[in-house]
Image (tube, rainbow, N blue to C red; front, side):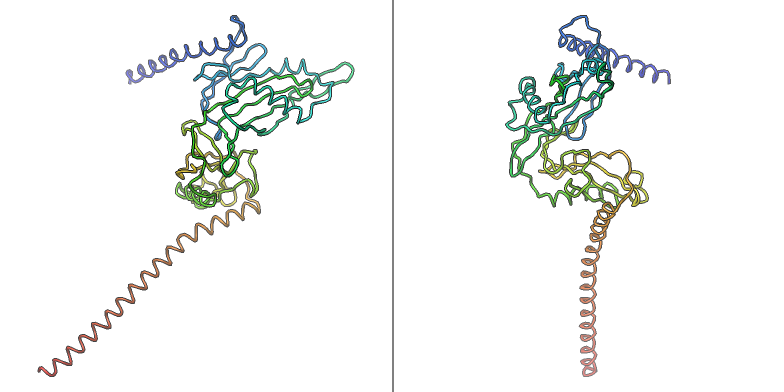
Length: 363
């Protein structure tokens, strides 16, 4: 027992000492970015898991006097920064009229072209979405108290095959003061394009069938995959044909589903939900191999409304139709076998009767 504790202690110490050089290098990267070798830099947290299909993360986050700064540990460089709340609210020029969305998009594209180092690797870019967030109240002597807002414009590359395919694993965002147009934050995530074949091996209908079957194989009693045009878009996450990656999958051409609605068996209800409160999973399958390489449960169970009940009813019919079709085949085989045995039985009786008739003449 003492040896086990000693091994555990040595392991913890070795991990701690192994981490410190990386932490020191990351802090130095922040100071270099600030151009201040004496700047106070506080460790704020780490992120080493991917979000949805937006590519892997391996980052440390830091607080400085004015900024929140992210260092990519694989490149050991600053890949994101944003002005902290207090200095932003203090300098927000909210006595002006806010800029229009088109003006904000123009500012975002201009800044990203200059500061995103991999911009020219992608032929096409689009605005994925614009978010506006209330960040605080500002007291103005003449105007009184007003709300300060911050705006972020998210840009994403895309490719063309037969359709437009969003590239999820690379993106950049630009945070803008919507009153002055000043840039108050910028960040990016980057994954190189490594796929040459952008033609899926099967159609969306087959993709839907495969992802539903994958959940049935995992223990769900019912599964209904949903595209966003069928209702319930979840946080505007892209679905359909996409290019994306998880923490470990590498880049994939994938069919991503808005979500998969599931109901479990009595043994799997904890994971897959019940008919009254089904579970929802975000999921994606490889569009070339059909492999289910990503799924995660979406937070919170839902009370099944009319739309959910219709989807679950469709899923239930699919589930029931599979064994029904198997029973039909088994029934036909069994019937054919019975007919064969019956005919053979009649033939054998006829043969015995002929022998009997002949025996009378012999005797």
